[in-house]
Amino acid sequence: MIRSVIPLIAVLLFFFEPVFSLFSPIDIGGVNFTLVPRFVIVYLIFIAIYDSRPRAIVYGIVLGLLYDMFHIDIIGLYAFLYPLICFIATVMIRQVHRHITTVMLLALALILLLEVLSYFFASFISLTSIGMEEFLFTRLLPTIIANSIFVGMFGWFFKNLIYKRVLQRQGETL
Image (cartoon, rainbow, N blue to C red):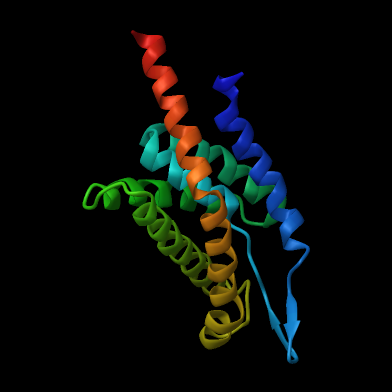
């Protein structure tokens, strides 16, 4: 059962993202704030850092393709961005200690990067018409705040779960 826990949680997070998207946009003072849950990429970042880069990249490609097929009209965007973010996470974590606080901050920075890259791509192909200032204020900031709450709540759990699975895998090879 423990073998399938890591991919099972990734799939569950994939299905929970649209559920939490139902709470968005939030109207505060006549301004609509859009919260974009990025549960899957947070989990993939933790897999990339605490387990293995190749595994996270494979999960990123599969879940990115699923995200592309079910949530947006462009096939390949998130199938490219998810593995790219996992790769960047593993490269950046080599420079610092893998402390949970560092990983949580790195995950938030990479969510920011993912949002900015997806915004620039959508702007480039004229899929969105909002300006940069509106994007920063009404989408990026609320997204970072909402995902920081998620990372704070589940970061320890993800780390411990992945670490236990890595230890179990090492025990199986001995």
